Length: 194
Image (cartoon, rainbow, N blue to C red; front, side, top):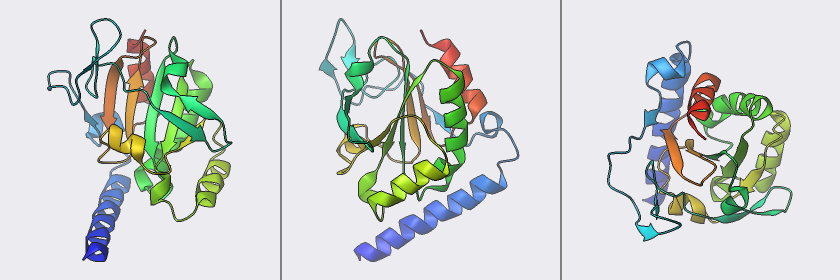
């Protein structure tokens, strides 16, 4: 039964990937291949945090803190980057839309003053070396965080991947994208943040 469910999920994801690739000639921002969360939804979590901001997953909430180890073995916490604008991206090597957005993410990292924390859903990978090979192939220079038990993915209630959060220098979520983003959208949302 579990295998059947997994096969159905993978088949659905592959079908979506084929659809996404066939429609990639249009810009992502115009084609609706991503979903932008607006700030009118109720909060997902509601712990009190710094000031009047609540920790949660909606725009305007303080982003939940987490601690993970990078592919290179360094321990990193989201709160270590307070004072900087941060893009948190959840991804996996086997995910076609993730693969499609990585070159744009690297370009974004190179051209803008942004910290990118790319959280790999390591438990879903065949082997850890798949992640290293992927990083080498795409020549990624931003930190790759390993979510070995998908604890942080669960904390952030990740459904589709890729999912990205753009967090301002105060730790507040300013933008959320469900699905792949292109470079132009990344820059557009980056320029809105402080």
